[in-house]
Length: 179
Image (tube, rainbow, N blue to C red; front, side, top):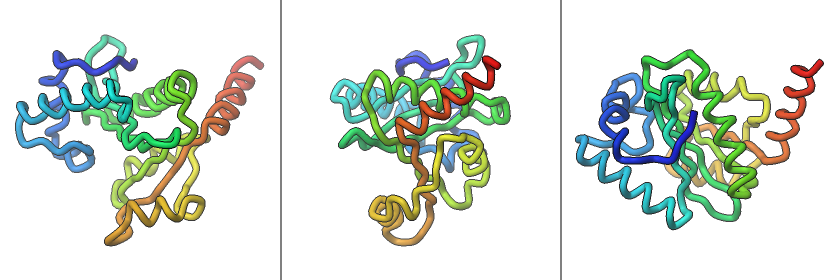
């Protein structure tokens, strides 16, 4: 479902990203395939420097369908950015990718808190994140971070996932399935 980024998937990801239903919500805006290729190379270098963790989201057949990143990593926290190509909307890929990514972040990279800033007008993403039992609204819990992401105007809601809450909810899900 997730794999480290490589340049071979850039063309298919770029074409998915350019869809008007997707492009306004992608963190890295690109005007050309060459620019997307350059940005992907840059992300791969940043991952080596441990300032970013970036993965490609794959469907069941191994086709690249989107990306998921943790950026601005500092003090065992960072910001999550995810996008899925529109042909794959509504199939649960985003939720499964987030769960798999959180397991990697919390167990392999020892991240403690993952922040998500979601544009207030991005109803699709807000609804998707609110379905995840381990995600909490952070506007009031982390007011300094909330103010930092909304310096000029309140464009974003801030959400967060803590390592402990994620694993508590994961254990609850496993107990329900086991009984």
